[in-house]
Each structure stands twice: as C-alpha cells, then as structure tokens.
Length: 235
Image 1 (tube, helix red, strand yellow):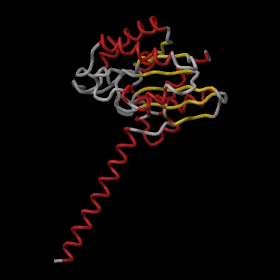
Image 2 (cartoon, rainbow, N blue to C red; image 1 turned 45 degrees about the horizontal axis):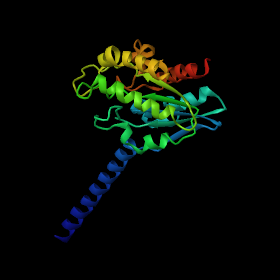
Image 3 (cartoon, one colour; image 1 turned 180 degrees about the vertical axis):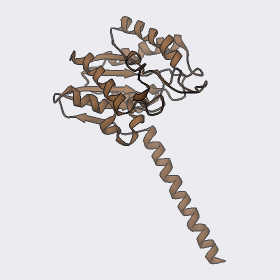
Image 4 (cartoon, one colour; image 1 turned 90 degrees about the vertical axis):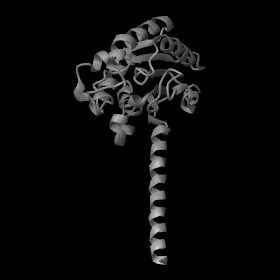
C-alpha cells in the first residue's frame, strides 16, 4: 500500500511540475522581456500586438521578428526595442488593452527617436470593434508618444492583411481592417501628423508570408521591416 501511495505522490509531483512549467511559459509569452536589437545611439521603439512580438517566428523572434530585422536594416547608428505584447488591443474595452500594461508606461519613458505603433488587428474582432472609440482612443494614444520628452517621430501602421480560412466573431477580421480600420488610420495620420505606413497594401497579395493566416513568417517580417526602414530613412 505504501508503494502505491509513493507512486501516486510521485505522479502528482510530476503533474504539478508540468503545470508550473506550462504556466511559466504562458506567462512569459503574455509578459515577455523587451528585446533590443542593435547597439546604436538612436532608438526606435516598436509598440504593438503579437505581430510586433513575433508570434509567427516564436522560436527565433529575437532575430526574425520584424523589429530585429529592422535593426539590421537601419545600420550601426540605430537600435530597435520590441514592445510587442500578444493579444493586446488599442481600445480600452478590449479583453487585454495595451494601455493597461507596464510595457505601455515603460515605453513612454524611453529616449526614443522614432516610435512605431501597430495596434488594430485584435480590435478588428467583431466582438470588440467600435470605430468611433477606436479612432478617439488611438488619437489620444499617439499624443502620449508625441509628447514624450525626446519628441520622437511617430508612425502608425495599417495592420497586415488577414488570411484566416474560416473566421468567426472571435477572430480578427480582414474586412474590418480593410474597409474600416485603414481609412480611420489615414484620417488619424492627417489629424495628428503621425506618419502612415500601409502594411495591408504590402501584404494583401502574399498569403505565403504567413505562418497561420495572421502572423508573418521571417519572409513576411523581412518585407515589413524593409517597408518601415524605407519610411524612416527614405532608403
């Protein structure tokens, strides 16, 4: 009988360990460390959701995420910090608003020369989408970065196209990104003076650039990084 109990306790201990490891992995994905690529004096900070985070290249996001690839394109004078957080929304009414995170507060304290903002893919979920709220809150969001002590140039990005095969109300919507979100971002750019980078136009003919219909592969991230680099440096 004692032997049986020892086996049960051992199994229970292993299960607890596995649960703990799984929980830690989930936490590390939800609340990752900031990855900074490059060693230059000038700083770009990339604020966004799982696309910025690098979910499509999870195992190599420190080198194959678009912020890391951007750093290699920008040259020795620059470094790029990845403030991407999976599943976050711009809207405060979303399930995980970016403005509720410590990343948001931390990013605003950086001595940034350039700020890249891309939040909207998760806001496009039909269950979350509110065009008026999105526009109002995005303008306020941009103003926070424009008013940073370093006075950075701020760019906003129209999110990439979405190629989910059977989306439902809980999924990001390509139609909302294309028909509603993109025109709103164009208006916001004009009102705030923030630069506009259209990643939808860049990606809409390239489903092969995606790992899962939503998150870019290294190839997709390379194209995104080149687009951003061109906007910032006119190269």
